[in-house]
Length: 99
Image (tube, helix red, strand yellow):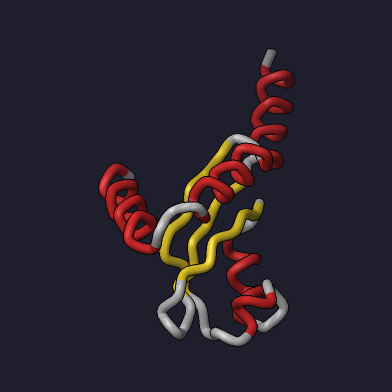
């Protein structure tokens, strides 16, 4: 039973994903998804991330939210990108209070 639990835990840890929001140097927001937020933030700040962030460095991590898998994080990203800037900031502030 312990082996099954270990395998399940490993599966969950390897498959979780995050939606993240960056604040760029110009004050704009960038939203993406990844399985490793720290590594992705480093990639953005070294100019090897998204084309959008390359000309708006440095970027800082404003928010991250964990999801059980990549498709869930991708869906959350797509929904989040539809929001206005004000709605995004309200969402972030509300969810930061919960966590």
